Image (cartoon, rainbow, N blue to C red; front, side):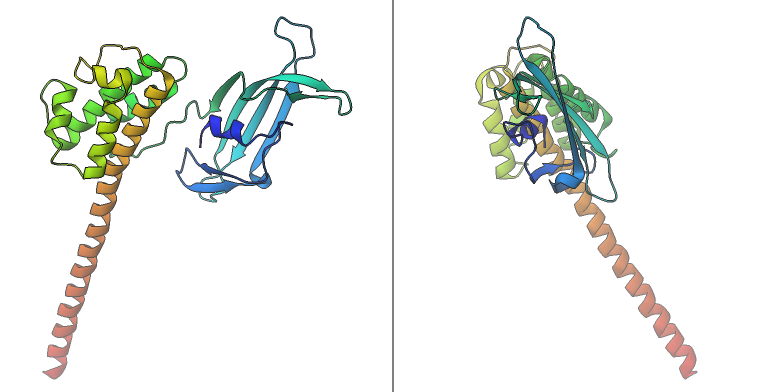
Length: 258
C-alpha cells in the first residue's frame, strides 16, 4: 500500500509484476492491481554527472473500485546502467536511492469527519514528514495518540504514560498489547512519559510503528464504534418500522371488523 511496496513489485528491468496487492489510500479498499490499472514510465540521465548512471521510474496506479477511480503517482530513483541492446536504462541496484509519493502527498489514510480534526491533522502531518524528519513525525504521532486517549476515553492526567495506564482496563487485551508493544520500543518507550511536544530522537522504523499504532487505534476506536452504532441504529429503525406496520395493520383490521 506504500511506495516501498511498489518498489518491491518492480523487477530488475523496472517493470511491475503482473499483479500486486494494494490498499487504495482514498477509498481504503484492498485490491489487486493489474496491467489495466497502472502505467509505468522511466527516463535515464544521459549526461555525465557526479553520480554515474541513474534513472527515474514513475508509477501511476488507478484504483479499480468503480466508485473511486482515483489515481496515485509515485517516483523512484535508481542507480542504473545502459542496456545497449535495448537502447534504454535499467535499474542496476535495489532498493531505490530515493522514493517520493507525489499524489497523494503522503501515505496517510483518509479518515471521515467523525474522527476529531486535530487527530486527523496531526496524523496526516506525521505521515507527510515521516521520511523527511522521523523525530518530528514521531512527536506529532505521540500528540495524536494522546489526543485520542483524551477524546475517546475522557482521560486527562497530564502525562501520556499515565493516561495510557489509565485505560489499561478499558480497552480490549489485543489493543493494549499493541499500545504496550510500541511504548516498549527504543526511544519511543523512553520518552512516552515526557512532554509530548518535546522532539526526541527516533529512527524511521520507530516513527512508522507509532503511525501504525495511531491507524490501528483510529480503526479500533472511532471507525469500529461508528460502524457498530450505524448498524444498531439500522436495526432499531427496522424494529420501529415493523412495530408501526403491525400497529397500522391492527388498526386497519379493527376498522374492517366494524
